[in-house]
Length: 98
Image (cartoon, rainbow, N blue to C red; front, top):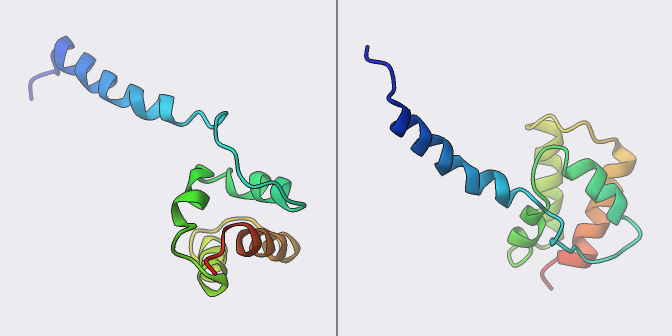
């Protein structure tokens, strides 16, 4: 097998740069609420918080409940029952579809 030439390697690295830069969430503003710190502390460990805003137009309480349960049971998120209840309350109130 032939080693990767420097121009191809450089192009590959540059193609990843926008993804890394997009991970900066300083401009991301979630709805304020008493459980916001719990959401930020638990959810951002595994994924970007923009997932909340991306899913907001689609999910009612039952959908958010399924998402929180999936993150814990399927994805292995280390979220306590108390924090899961706070996260669900926040997502339903702040981003639930009427």
